[in-house]
Each structure stands twice: as structure tokens, then as C-alpha cells.
Picture 1 (cartoon, rainbow, N blue to C red):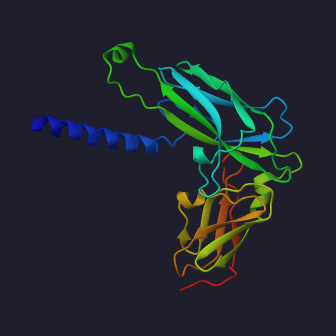
Picture 2 (picture 1 turned 90 degrees about the vertical axis):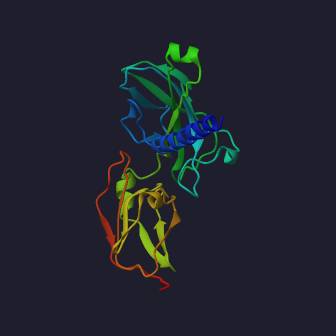
Picture 3 (picture 1 turned 30 degrees about the vertical axis):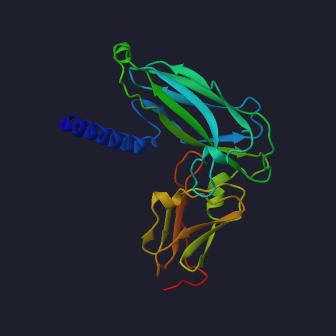
Amino acid sequence: MKSFWTRLSLIMIGSLLMLNSLSVSANQAELKGISFYVMRVIYPDNASQGVALTVYNKSDQPFLMQSWIRNMDPQTGGVAPQGKVVTPMPFIVTPPLQRLEPNSDLTLRIRRTGGELAQDRESVFYIATKAIPSTPANMAQNGGQLTLAVVSNLKLFYRPSSLPDSGVAGAASQLRFHLEGNTLVAENPTPFWLTFSRLKVGNYLFDNAAMRLMVPPKGQQRYNLPAGTKGPVEWQLLDESAWSTPLQQQKSLTGSSRY
């Protein structure tokens, strides 16, 4: 009897480790052939028919695709917890639920449904897509089959037509930085949400977790620095196609640093 519970415990621990590993990989935009050719979607305010997003299935099995819009959490740069969503979404995704056949593609359409959005700056949301794999009939009959669905989140930027045509590339050179103690403050005077692909102060290179924090339009974002960090600031941004903009540099930082 003891050996049975020992084996059961090992199975449960192994399952938890597997789930933890898969939850990390679930942040990627591709699993078993499900992929996107874009990493972000721009929605111009004059897109009367909405904008399209294509999902590709390059595997030999079908998936059930569920799609919807989610809020962004400005504190983390990631998807906002569902409890924070208090107003109806200004966008929908159609079809919200659709079978995606093997070695084929599915075109989703994002449409504006109303709501008040700022006209002097961008607004940002996430397009969530859940890929639910099919279960072979023999496994479904036997039971005990663990099916894991992977959710991918792509950024959706609502862009009013009054904003400059230069977009993110034109905004990159307008960023300014200063120090507040051991905090690097990025100041964004532009109407665009800005995401770093590279951010460096002196010899200190920020990691991807830090750069996930976007700099809001006409606002600031703060990034923690190790004590004593000094030197010029170098940065690149992700443009509308998720390519890095040319390298920019600010040679000196104003403010004081606590050593």
C-alpha cells in the first residue's frame, strides 16, 4: 500500500513539473505548428471593416481556436487579471470559436464595437487566442487523457488617424531619461506606446522582464537600476512590425544616484 502512494506521489509531482514547464512555453506564439506571422496588430481608427489576423496550423492535427480581446495591465505590461476588467471591451474577434484544420490557416477579424478611446494617443489591448488540440477517439474513450490548451497574447494597438505617420520610428529619438535615486525614468512625449528591444545604462543591460514594461504615451515608466550604475543610455524600440529601430543614445543622465 505504501508503495502505491509513493508511486502516486511521484506521478503527481511529475505532472506538476510538466505543467509548470508547459506554462512557460505557453508564452511563445507557436506550439506544435500553431503560429503567427506578426507579433503585434495596428488598428487604425479609420478601419471601417476591421483588421485581419491570420493563424497558421502547420501540424497534422486540428485545433479548436478560441479568440477574444483582453486588457493590458499597465503595472506589468502583461495581460490584466480578469478581475480588473470592469467595462465592456471596445473590440471583438470573429469568429470567436472556430475549428482550424491540419495544414491550413484561419483568418480572424478584429472589429471596433464602440466605447470611448483617446483620440490624441494610442490605446493598447491584447488579442488572446487559445489553441485546444484534438483528442484521438481511442484516448477519449479510455479516459485519463490530459489535454493542455495554449493561450497566445498579441498586442493590439488602436491608433487614431491624427497621430504622426512616422510612428514608433519617429518616436524613438524623442525619448528622454533621467535618474531618481537608483531608478531610471523614461519620459515619452509622443502619443505612441513604446516597447524597448534594447535598453542599457553604462554596462548594465536590462533583461526582457524589465523591458516588458512599456512607456505610455505622454507619460513615464520607471526601471530599477543596481546601485552605482552610471554611463550613457542606449536604447532601441520595437516598431510596428516588431523589428528593432536604429540605436539611440543619451550621453548623460540628470538627477542624483544613491551610491
